[in-house]
Image 1: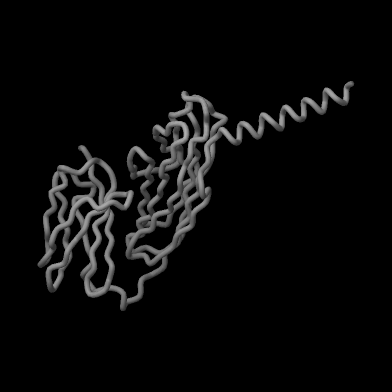
Image 2: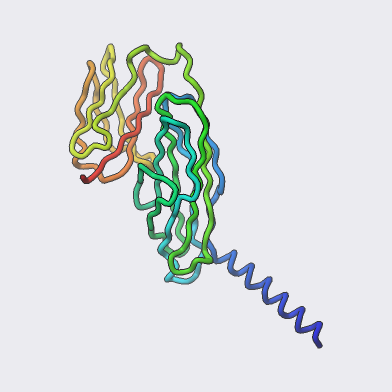
Length: 231
């Protein structure tokens, strides 16, 4: 009789454990590595899915628990609500993810011409049920750009960054080029023609968050991140 009770308890624990796992949250992949030349940036992206069947389990909080990046780098982190910069260990934000929904988790490493390695880890936890938790680790590496890859003294600049109403793209071109602005989801927001040295872009209609300016010049693909703020 005692053996049957123990067996029943073990089966109950296993069943509860499997149910909890099935109804938890899942970050896929849990670890993402990126690398590239130090004249650009790389995004380590993942997807978080809320498998809970409890309707109250819809508010989640991510918190940075490890933050190590090379000197000179910048880092920004995005959830399905927005993007955040100037982060450190302990930085935290909440976002909504309803039952059965999936959303993005993205960390961008901006190299700023500095080589090195970096890693950032965040833990995501349901605010109403701490048992629903998972972690996401982002790892990045950059290396020095060869002299043949750059045009001396002619690197694209965007300022002020973050921008509020206007953003200036400074980059010398010999002939007009079409420049496209994308949001963090990769959707085209707008485009314009850049010629000469400077173009002023009206950003007052853009929502707060991170965007990318992308264009090609002499076969070289150029991607430059910038941020729009309400302040």
